[in-house]
Amino acid sequence: QVHADTSPPAPPRIAPLAFIRLSGAGQAGETRSAGCTYLCCAYMGCAQSTEGVSPAVSLAQTYERLALDGWTDEDLTAFIGAVSAQGKLPEYDQILAAAKHPSLPEEDHTGAAFFDALAWYTDKTVIRRLDGQLTLADVDAAVDLWARQYADAATQGGDATGRRQKWKLLQKLKLIEREIKGRAAAGQGSFYPYSPHELNQVDASKPWNEANTIDTAEEFEARVIAGSYAQPVLVKYGLPYCAHCLLLEHLGSVPAAAEKYSGKVDVVKLWWDPHDPAKADITAVARAQGVTSSPFFMVYSAGKVVAQGYAFPDENGDGLEDLLAGVV
Image 1 (tube, rainbow, N blue to C red):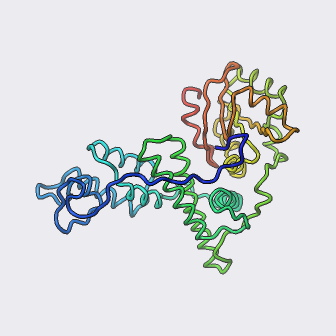
Image 2: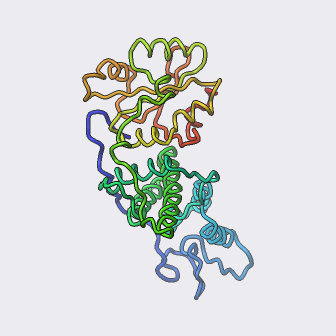
């Protein structure tokens, strides 16, 4: 998320975690048979037990199968939980390797708008070249950074919303990687082209934005506070220089959420900017609601905030389930 009174921060430096490495039999305090190649042996006991199939074999085989088939966030967190339940430490390198090989989304997203937004966001937040071309080397660098952030969150029990956000980004990177390889095979170049200038701003003229963007204190009072007596109202607070806010914008995540929850929740946007005098009034509204950074979501019912937090809905409107639990 981006805090209002500072420039967008540089990608955080990832401190290495303590983890158990495979460095010979018994190094992790477990018995390991000579010649055993199971990656899980160092912390789960040897899979080549002479006493038949053991839970360790099941976990080891599960890891190897999913390493071939592709992981889901649910699979990987369940695997970490199973290891932890045995009083062991998950091997960080294994979790990192799994995070770099996610299964593709069930819905195979394609289209220029999707790839344009993803290429711009990846370049702006990781590469910071913004030359209109995202290369395979750029994708690899982003995968490495976001996989490490995911692995840190997964092994340290970090924020589940942030962890799932990184996982979705890793899945999307696999899609754009495939797109770039397809362009290269067709002789179109080993990169994905995009327009930095167009993607670095909000298009307020889009019909949905015109109808559902809160621009004044009066609109906020009528549409959000008063309107929330008829049905809950979800407000997405965004900063126009926040990269993730703009990614949600270009993916159409908020309109998708409005469609998904149509008839149950009214969904609106509010763009605030403490650096723009023209937005002083609407920024005062955001400040009065306690908003200090973005993207931030608040749910109103009967004139009051009933849920709030950071959320990262995708282009299908998925990702708000925790925030809206108990509301819809």
